[in-house]
Amino acid sequence: MTDYLLKNRNYILFALLLVLIYFPIFLHLTYMPIRMWDESITGVNAIEMASNHHYFVTYIDGHPDMYNCKPPLLLWCIVLSIKIFGFSKLALRLPSAIAALLLCIYLFCTIKNYSRSSVFAFLTVLILITCNGYVRNHVTRTGEYDSILTLFITMAAFSLFFATEATEKKQQSWHLVTFSIYMTLAVLTKGIAPLMFAPGFMAYVLIRKKIVAFLKNKWMYAGVAIFIVFGVGFYFLREAINPGYLKAVWINELGGRFSSVNEGHEADFSFYFNEIITWQFVHYMFIFPAALIIGTFFSDTVIKRLVLFAAAIGTMFLIVISIAATKLPHYDAPLFPFLAIIVSSFFYFIYTIASEHLRRIYQWSTASLIAFVFVLSFFIKPYSDAISRVYFPKGDWWEEGFSVSCKYFQHAVQGTVHEDNCKLIFDTESIGSGTVIRCYEQELKEHHINNPVIRHDEVKVHDKVIVFDPYLKQLISQKFVTEEVHSLLFCNGDVIYIKSEK
Image (cartoon, rainbow, N blue to C red):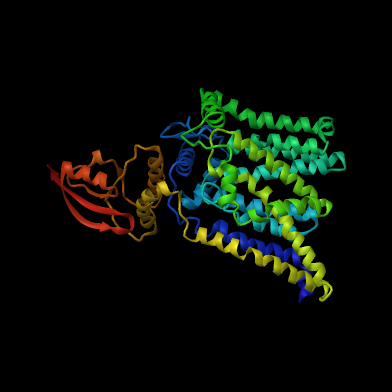
């Protein structure tokens, strides 16, 4: 039996990994209502793009969106998802989840092929999917930019790594071109964000003393041309279609986020370090120093190279985002694949030591299996914690009250509540809550559910309305004589009949 497992271990490990990946990334993906701000804004952008077919200019409320200035690659993915599934939370979030799955598969296959160890590759991915900072809202679990960004940045980084490892010019040329392609895709996902990796990329190339070789390679310039034409070129294309776009990019991205504080998201230089230590990477921080030492000094040459690469890229990126004026916890999401590689070297070292000792007692295949199960036991707590977080996931504390009201839409779409011809009273003036309502209006429309959303000042006599906010209910009662029909406790809503004016 153990011989069979050893013979087919690559396939078995990959199958086991797919099962382990599924639960943190896909389990209860649609449990939470649509989140305010980032997720709902991308939802509205995608709804309007699917409707107006303007694929290079994002729209909101029928006008070009000059606030969310990011390029449209994520929106293209969501629009495709909408075309297949119709608009829903699943369609909105599936591109982020699929990007996370693809990243895990890419890491496993790439690291296995380079290190010749499926165990090392398996452990790297297992660490990544148990990182609080990676499998979370705003990254893999919601319809936002950072999951796809992390995928392309990681692929770009490995292309650069393999370009430095290449012994033949043809291989080096191929990797330099793919590096440029992945960087272009990263820019088309989240604008200037991937450029924050540039200092790390440059540092690693200098460490490996490859700068002259790259400058002599004509295919590097072909890659630069690809980046300029398709990456930088997008910005000028949109400016030609939508004048004023470049100015908006400067205000909201370059000047507004990196060099000055945007929307009050201010923190000191140690912000990301504290986030990583206290919760984002908390399961592995206590062994991180040992992993760095072991990976750098005691591992074989191949793993040493990977650890050095991950440390150089990760350190420089962490410094750059720490210097930036605007700070948000999910901005460091692309860091975690590199942290996972470093920590994986520690567990792989334990695995190899345990295997060598056990081979004195057992056959080679049996010893390897026992050592692998032993190392896997270290991940019971991190993995169970990851499942606990996604089983009944929660959003940010400041939006949870509003999200309770949004449960009405979820129940209506599922057919578990029947309040046809009731008008829903929401404050749609705020871009945060208003865009959430826009998303749910689209979902109700696609399910042919007649629950129009109106403002409190649009209520008329003989309307039957559902009010979720006590303040809005008070405003209505000041103007009208009302009769409370019944309450919807699951969403904090009250069904009210408007009898007459006061």
